[in-house]
Image 1 (cartoon, rainbow, N blue to C red):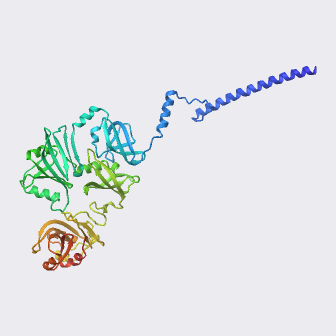
Image 2: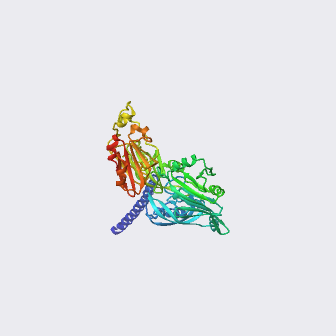
Image 3: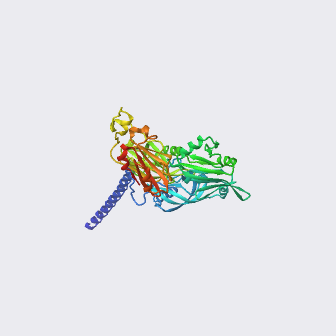
Length: 516
């Protein structure tokens, strides 16, 4: 009986144990499901179990994988070669690139070899070199570009345009392919193509304007020829052509930058050609830069937000600009640029510097009063006369004999004749063309720089305290010293002679002048 009783007890225990295990298992599933639901409600991205469903169908999974791959885009470095295909668009702002490819925000393009505007709106293939890298944005110089559509190629071949940024001009004949232009030794030859023969219609000799030069001072030349009353006309593009002394030669100017002598085969040919000529004018360039100030004047530290002054000028044939303004942070900064001319203007930043007080900045020279050229117009006297000396009510003669200086230190400026003049004190000066021989046969002085104290501004042109003459002669320095008399200093300047004439009370200042 005992054994039987024991058998019944063991069966009941087993049953209860099975029930308990099943209950615990079901309870675990319920609790686990609750945890998952709670995580989902809280926005948790935690996956519970290896078979967790992310809720994406097959197409969405593929799109997600593509995005993950695009986040690891290839990086480019300076001088890397890139090739791309797409539709070319023109950039709206002036900066260090001019064009971009549609739906590609990582690259900007420019070219000194191709007229990229001709390709705008067309599907193209291009190859270029990375020339600038900024925060995952790449500027590319285009070295080769082609249309994807051969028909577009045929249209491009019919365009006749010639750009000469080194001379500040270009020709746009459009679809009139009866003209061509050749360049040889800084002379442009405008030719007419007729039955495969080329007839020269005009030759153009550009030159850079040099203030103070007897042959390259554009303002002086324009005034001189205009005043003589010879024939002139204005082209449809606003370029004024002036005949030179009733000869076959004419002259025109790109104000303050370039001048051009042009010799046409006839006046009628000149009038015809002039309608296709365009100039990169200084004012237009300034307007382009100032209206895009934040895209041309910026680096890793500063972005110019507003400008106070701008000066566009030539430096050894390269157009440059200096812009003074305020950064986004309120700092006074100056920005120096190289300007590249073509079917679009683009710029290269030289440097951005802080100025301290921008009112002290002279765009024609540095803050230590150094200047690049001698200008025909005299320098103006500063407004702060009370700080530099009281205004005297005494006679001009007494004022002239009184030593007057704007401050300590030297003043250096460069003459258009190729030599530097250093003064021991700050004075005003003005250069002009003269004809002087000092009654010495064989001496020809053709240029004079007048120098005087600031309070004698009215005497600068007519009777300056010091006159520095540039002279051409075959005479020796000793021969001139023997014959010229007192109150003169004679110095050699390579193959020429410099003569310094001075009044008695300017003797010390004249003797301190350094000619380099």
